[in-house]
Image (cartoon, rainbow, N blue to C red; front, top):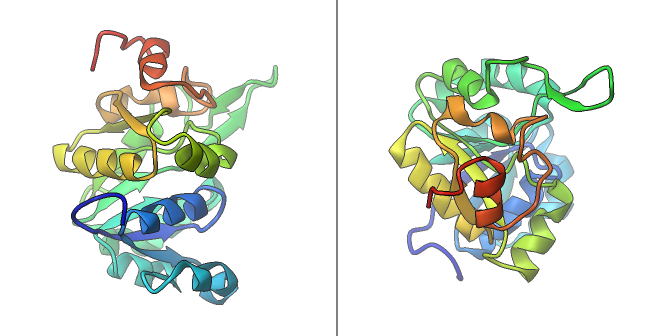
Length: 219
């Protein structure tokens, strides 16, 4: 065990390019991870070598087994998933790592939600009984494993939350994944990590993230 002193039970909903590397990081830090899927049997070859603190389950089973839930399904599947699980997610910390990616007419990334609404605010409104945070959304997913293992605690990771407890848990899990948390503020202030935002796709140190987001004076 190389990470947190207090192990958490983490449910990852969507074992893809974000969920898999983060799950492996958190297992290495000593946490228990349940990878949720519509078809848990398809994850057997991935999960079995990870040890007895890792297992595959349905989405609902993953939530029931967990204190903290990571949303990392493809964005088009998110609303239907939340409709199925909304009651089960109540009372839990939910880290939303999804991205409502769209393209403008000139080929630039934009948020499908349009101006004035962040994904974090949308998720908090959608899950009023949960403690919602945003993280792991702006960082290129293909780098989550390599940068979190080979250059631990060098690269910054933007986070946002309205709830102090959710912020604390998210900062812990960001560190356990090998990154440095950079608090951007409340969920309504997290547009920087949404598609088209100042940090979307941006990789830098914590100081670099703060500067790019206009928060260079904030620790």
